[in-house]
Amino acid sequence: MDNIKLYLAPMEGITTYAYRRAYEHHFGNIDRYFTPFIANKKMGKRDRDGILPENNSAKELVPQILTNSTEDFLAICRALAPYGYKKVNLNLGCPSATVVGKKRGAGFLGEKERLEQFLEEVFEKSSMEISLKTRIGLNEEDEWEELLAVYEKFPLEELIVHPRLRCDFYKGEIRFHAFEKAIKRIKVPLCYNGEINSLEDYLRVKERFPTITRFMIGRGILRYPGLTEEIVSWEKERNQGKEIPSYRESKTDREELLKRTRDFHEEILEEYKKIMSGDLNTLFKMKELWCYLGESFPGKEKSLKKIRKTNSLREYEIEVNNILRD
Ligand SMILES: Cc1cc2nc3c(=O)[nH]c(=O)nc-3n(C[C@H](O)[C@H](O)[C@H](O)COP(=O)(O)O)c2cc1C
Image (cartoon, rainbow, N blue to C red; front, side, top):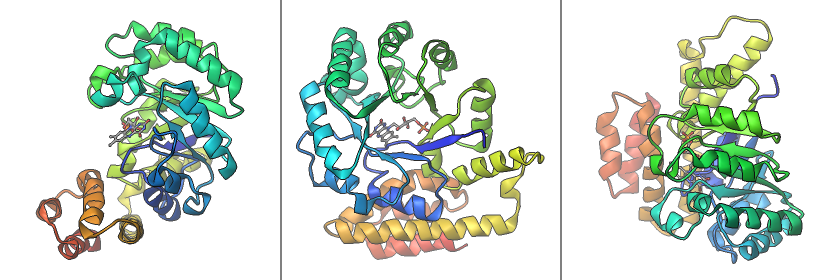
């Protein structure tokens, strides 16, 4: 399959171990999962649950760290090592005002000298393989060349690029030409991330960057969990020399997919019922999922609205049933 690798993007509050494990059980097709960022060197219960091997059935899970302190980064690496982790990822993309204000995430991109010193020290002192997940700058595209000049100095395990500036947040045109610059300069494996929401989007990115084999997908999977299946099927059939398959056209496939989505949802819900304190917290977690998943069900607006409004887990389950049983 041309060694195509698909990654599930880390999404704070959403791609928890419960989500990742259920995704792996019912859809799979993901070569590498990432935890949402771990920011506290003491690693709270949620962070710890997220990395415990017994909570993770995936082939590969890479913990992500959000910090600008070498001391904290190294402390988190030391805490992860006994669980068998050999790779970590540094978050250089989080655009939230609180994070950026503390010069972490995308905020660290504005401190290039400090960032370079940080990387020098962690590469020297840590035996972990380190990858970066980065935006292309804070406010100006000109920042990208300087960042690339820093990144190319280090033996990164990989460089994952979301070709947007911090000021773009999660909207606006993807700055494809910036990704092209990375391809020209960066010698370590590069992974593309951003707005792969359909098979067509995937094919467009692939056509534009034919040498790229690593793709990280976030909201596209949240909205439509069957997306990786479409991509993998397309790749398989292409390798067998077939015409481009029209995966979603078959009714059996659609029904099968709906059933899997149902089981996937059920598994996440059951886990949250076990680990969250109280129905309302469980409901809150599940509602977050539907902000994205709901987009796959046009014509179900009435039930989706009830899901948004309800405070009852029972009513929630009835409405989910309405959506996923049809
Ligand atoms: C709700 C939400 C939470 C996110 N949390 C994280 C995170 O913890 N770490 C991270 O590196 N990126 C995080 N991201 C960014 C995604 O990993 C990804 O880079 C971004 O959504 C673009 O990819 P997409 O267009 O495929 O969704 C988050 C994005 C969203 C929407």
